[in-house]
Image: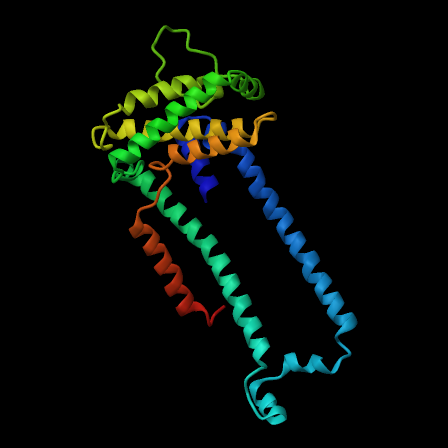
Length: 279
């Protein structure tokens, strides 16, 4: 769904598909969708083969087919053995927790994506962010700029690895469109520092277009820092620093209000309580 929305937005706005989609992550997603079922098939097939070969002839095999009435006739009680029940409870709880957490993340992400699309004025950035959080975001951008100035060879390596920028306009008009490219990193940082002065206490003074532009530029800078961290020769300390800066940059950009988290959690929980019999 997210990939489809990104493609639709790129087609409707006339922007680059390369900018709209993180092709590296898209490749990972499709690779996992292809590989995961194959791995699951091999593991499940291996377990079935081992059970049929080494367990089908034992006396314990018929226990898994007993219904409560059969168990009561042979053992005098309907309930399965204690450790069997414990194993079922632990395995079911583990699957519910891991699968529910995954569904929760997807649900929150999709809801926020819809809200950013239909009501950008209120959700494209965290309008409830405090002055401290905004200052933290601005300081992270400034610290990232200092890091680039101290390691000028890293941006050059990244620029050489990326496709070249589109040709500049030759009609003499001022270019205001922003292209997410490593070569534009310092320009992006300058734009953010202009939009976020040091004494800013709220995002309210920014117009809707400025908030949308801020979000796009911050995501671009964050993506650049992530790519820099993966370059060969970057130390572990620098990788941790870039990760910390990236987290601070996006603290007021990639967020979810508490009421959305609670709504998605309740929807999943109530849906499971009502629909578990069908499953």
